[in-house]
Image (cartoon, rainbow, N blue to C red; front, side, top):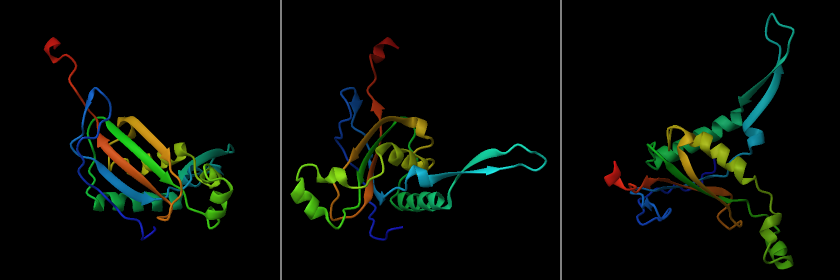
Length: 178
């Protein structure tokens, strides 16, 4: 795990999610190590069970994935993150590693140089982090009712992902009807 990674958790008020949602009482913000690719998270091997001639595919979580999951869990727990009940909003900001030739790229194409930087796709990032934070920030990822994913431009702070986790509290809709 990258020792330079900071963990930030705090209380934030006034975070507008949508017109019919109240501001959450508690928002956790974590700065976590850059996620491993889903291609390195799961692996498949072919096995032949004893007493059988038929091979079968077995998909498993790799040791590298288990280590990433453990590192994320330790950081989240150290930040005071507890599983939320109910609906959850997850916001991801993925910062890829800034290459050594970034200044040359920026001079060549000032507006879109960051698009040439190698980066895992946001879907893989979300899945890996959802798996790593399951049981820590929420009970199950089926609680995700809002997911916001952004790929950010690389910067001087290194490769990382910033995760903001907040409960979604709905305003009662016509409570007098019930």
